[in-house]
Length: 142
Image (cartoon, rainbow, N blue to C red; front, side, top):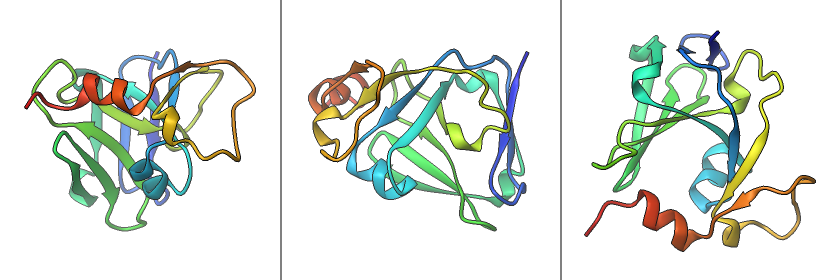
């Protein structure tokens, strides 16, 4: 099985070789600005991703360890990708809303929980990580 998705106008499409098993929420300030709220993302190793229409993408190096990609035509956020050397290098994080069919993939975790605005929360219990814990996992060593 595989899942596919696209930007709003369809100029950029992607296919995941494996069905996602879970997705997570990121509450960091950058993701909130990038997505207009909570970024709900699913992780996919680079070797399992096929992106078509890459000529319609613009990437923005949003931090020393990652870039964000947008469709040049419609402006849709397409993915966040880890660029720093290490075990997560090349990993994609696609917005759950870009999938053509989300199905019943569960929300299992939240990142930057200490940056979450106080006005919302999820009904189900998730694994939660603070800014310090996330930085230790993703940020490149100094």
